Image (cartoon, rainbow, N blue to C red; front, side, top):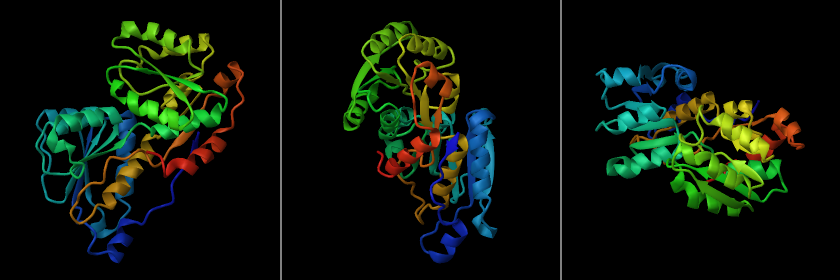
Length: 318
């Protein structure tokens, strides 16, 4: 896989020496992991490493706790200099239910899930106290990958479920801006999935997967891949795992990239410790399944070339 890293930002120690009045006295970071291994642990490890690279007071005390231990009553420190990092949707949902004074940064969470929680609670609607680094890439970045990979395709099929249905207007707008027509079908249950998928594939040149737990999960992915292959319609995924499983390509952020971005966000909190607005992944990768490309008779640029093209639009992507 090919990875892109944005230019390195100023270290916290340097920032403190140059801008003493703009820095916030960070005392500690508590990470709450939805699960204790896999990508959750990888995000936590990278976050810990990046935050530990300062010197003296620039290095906050870093603590990790599991979602299960939080539910069982393990306390969360409430010191004025604390920041909470919810890693994964489970941790986000649990912390959102508590009236905590600390700013909460949610990472490795789908945009739709974060926005739903923010709408349901007026207090959480203030991004200065409850913000996120989304798991999913900006629509513009995803459509750009499809455009660069398959320049002659115009109709992009998108299958939505209950967790992603509200994204339809934004998807249509982003598709139009990229020169595509979005062909959208919705499935309200797993029994609706394959009929909706077959209707969609009959009128689409390519399929773009959108994170939705009903549509794309370990129980459905093989059926979706076999069905799209039968129709000879390439499927663009949203993770490295999906590329390995059989999607044609994907733009995604690996856990270490999300952890690095979270560390930089924490290091640059202002004196009032207000969080920035929710943001898309800054660091990202491109993956291609060359075997699938050959099977579909497609000649794609290599990963590095496609990534280089996406880098050019990264800063302006919504």
